[in-house]
Amino acid sequence: MLLIEAIAPEGAAASETLLLPFESRCKSRLRTRLASGEEVGLFLERGRVMRGGDRLLGKDGRVIEVVAAAEPLMEAQSSDPLQLARAAYHLGNRHVAVQVFPGGLRFGRDHVLGEMVRGLGLPVAEIEAPFEPEAGAYGAHGGHGHSADGEGEFAKTRPRIHDHFQPK
Image (cartoon, rainbow, N blue to C red; front, side, top):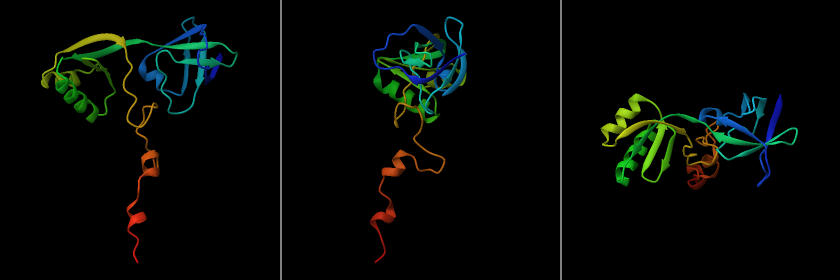
């Protein structure tokens, strides 16, 4: 089994491909197969989301290109940016991964979410396509920036009340 533990250097030419849906591209530990059928084990930095076009470095020196697999999605399109913003807000409020593109949104196929977006006045189509949702406000890893103790990146840099209002 080929082990992959690193990202390939910028501009490295790939000799293999790894086709994965979004859910699998969010995993830092994964046993899967290359397009050629060869078994691979991924052991990447935790919290990293692989994107279509990313290149990984195998322990044997081979470079593997990540390809975003087509998957069942829903797509809403509109020429009205306000309608799209409202739909993106309501999807995000439900912690749904959303891909934003000019004139539209994509999200995982779910009939309840599709009806919600239709209720906001947008037509929704069921499609099969690669899914590349937004990474999130706290960085490319796709997480919320919180650690188990509540001291995420924002918490480490924000001013605290007791820093400014010390009793005299």
